[in-house]
Length: 347
Image (cartoon, rainbow, N blue to C red):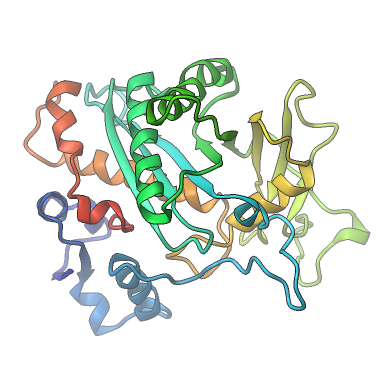
């Protein structure tokens, strides 16, 4: 692993061309790299060293946090028992788009969790047609197929259940996602072995969902003066689409202003998991983002996929590709050294 310190690069140092070029080079030769700013060393803000060590640990194949699946005295933690009931492949999926008006490709990322301790991951990235949200069948199928192979290499058995969280899809795209991406998951399973049909759970995560909630006088949390709802609030009636299994979830305290929970819509649920199990499981995934000590607003698999797709998009924008670069010319740029695919090298 390589750690590199930069001088004064301004507030947008993470977008600096030197950083992008260095990231691109290291990802292709299989070296995980962590960039730092020299001025932070001189007067580090509170928690800086702890956060930096968290990132370094992830890139060295370490684990910062893991779910407590078993409760004291025996039994399984409600919600997290989904990871223990059967071999389960947990996926997060997101797409990064270039700036409006650019003809550069979009990048779709699929990040899989290989074990019940949330310690082993595998990342696949593909270039797509610019401004396209739905991942094409062939690209989605190839990414899922690689995830299934990685799961088998790690565990020695194929997954019996696939739980996929999808970020960034609008309500009017649900039908397209169902016909394209979910169908691609099925095709990937059939390509692995004829007759192989794991249970599929597919959940779409949408920011905000157009709803705001507040607590009444009896439901207010001590110390919260803004009337925000308590953390882990779930709303699954009245203000949700009755035609789909959906729910609003606010996983943490509002730090400033009105809390904005996310809307989760279940497009497929082969094992007929209960609403309580899925809601608990989803809320607990918000506690497992490996580079943050606080609860985050979205599930950790989607956060990882967002970072992977975003890093690739920003990296390609700052390399020597023209604004009219085609998908075919950028597709090879998605190649990541196999040694890095098994670690969160983009955090």
